[in-house]
Length: 151
Image (cartoon, rainbow, N blue to C red; front, side, top):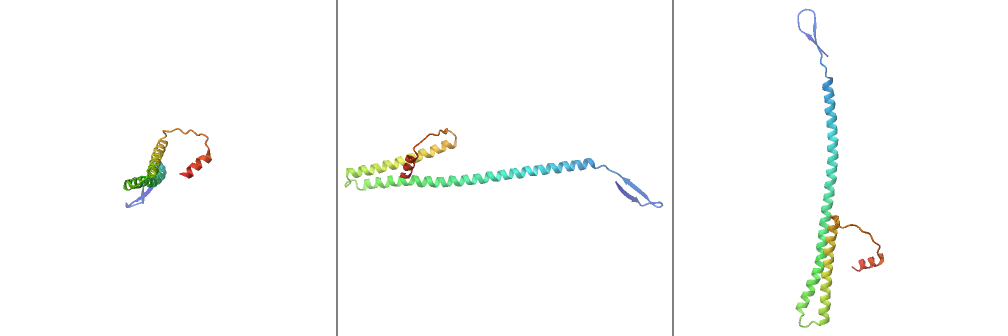
């Protein structure tokens, strides 16, 4: 309710105006609650996106590390293969059959090592894609660890 005096000569007169703003206040309250709800939802979504971004950064970093490790691991047997074959070529006239066999065995072991690494990388990729079913089995842990240490 609003009272406003009128400037007229004579007795003082007032103009009274009245407006019901209940509906307007209810709408404002409803809009305020909607804004709060949406703000909360956006904050949650932002947190989820930030978490996903951190996960992607970590995955990207792991992939870079994996790439560097694989590159190093493949270069080692390739260097052995290359060095052995160059030595065979340089010393072809003076090399003994036993040395040829030893160098050939070294080359073959390096090729087998690379083949195993390639198969392992492909196997891990298939595991990541859920193309391989997990089937646990018993094994000789001592023999497995001995073989791993020998590698």
